[in-house]
Image (cartoon, rainbow, N blue to C red; front, side, top):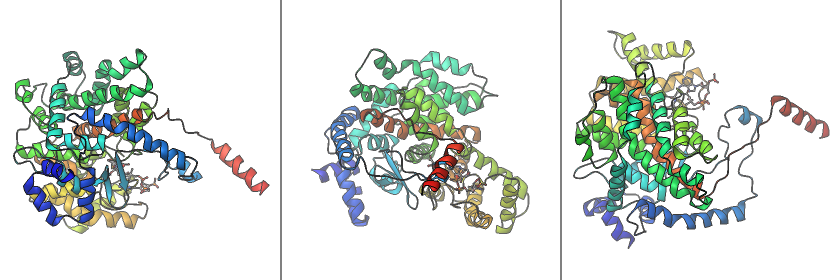
Length: 482
Ligand SMILES: CC(=O)SCCNC(=O)CCNC(=O)[C@H](O)C(C)(C)COP(=O)(O)OP(=O)(O)OC[C@H]1O[C@@H](n2cnc3c(N)ncnc32)[C@H](O)[C@@H]1OP(=O)(O)O
Ligand SMILES: O=C([O-])CC(=O)C(=O)O
């Protein structure tokens, strides 16, 4: 049964190739996660998972509810709660050495296992990742097709929202601000807000949350494209007829932005998959969870996540990276891209008191596998691009500089170091826009997780805070009584 579904999901040729080359643990995990439900829609598949998952959580809480998961030191309380295990988030898990796993699958595994665009796509379809994130199962091709059709059906943005977006002061307003406004403008259609107002029982909130999540995800490519074309192309939009027939989200995003190359469609699919989720503690995911815990609907919650993503230490770093790389090229002038010259310019950034964007991470302690996946794309499609060569050379230089500086816990590059030069190569040169693309992708993970927050009935978040005086008195009292 499982194997038959696997054949369906991968195609016979891929299966044969996979059997020969895959480590057996990957093979076993893949077979275990194959879609076993005969669900023909994502909604049906999620529904079938809810009761078993509620039972699992109940059992875990019964058995281990009073165990200590972690202890919080004073330094952690002051230090952004770094590495404190204090939340549960099901859709992905980050290992400091290995990087992200989406429902247990690493990025290369997702690239192998998730269905691709027909006839010759090489990157996984984001709709397949959405199925995986929401259900924990590797979907079949026909299940992914059902998500593609569902999102396509929901993709049109209400004209009154488009009109309001057209009125924003595009030259002065950052695209991320426009994006956050756009998501808030879409909120008036929230099914979850409506159901709550009509007194729907708590046990059903997840259904409305899923409904909102799918509609919002479906509309984000058109919203992003509206912002892009308004801000950088004088409000000249791609005609709707050109988009209507497009079947998948990655290609719809590419085409709505105004890009026609198949390779760029593939880049968008990869981009949407890579940036989707990074466990629960990062600023955008945590903001979505926190705001959602007040039963704010998915639109309000996701707008909060976007506002966090727009910070330069988080998603905005991709914009900062491209600017920094271009500045570096300008400063180099006619000098060659040698280790010594690049080293000097990196130190200049540090001496000015700035961070080197695209390097370091709060959790990762090795090169981000999302960086590696983008590097592989670049090696295949743009190996001679000058900016790619600069990024490659910096891989040899920056970690050493950061190690010499002696402050950072992780000197290696993160996802944001690589994305800008790929976009720029294909003509998407407006770096102010890059974080909007990140946000379109981040909806897949954070909204999937939000659906599960409601399905599991998680309560309002409300950790206890204390003051510096409280800490002093608490520990002084303790040492006197000891
Ligand atoms: C999608 C993403 O969000 S990925 C991250 C994107 N952000 C960036 O690329 C910005 C550059 N990087 C950074 O600022 C940081 O590495 C972060 C924000 C990602 C992680 O921050 P932290 O967990 O606090 O990092 P860490 O514990 O290593 O920081 C220790 C010190 O090193 C500094 N540091 C960390 N990374 C860098 C860097 N790339 N360049 C220079 N200094 C750095 C920190 O600012 C801190 O200095 P301080 O003690 O004077 O305040
Ligand atoms: O995990 C983090 O803190 C930041 C990050 O890389 C992401 O959210 O993608």
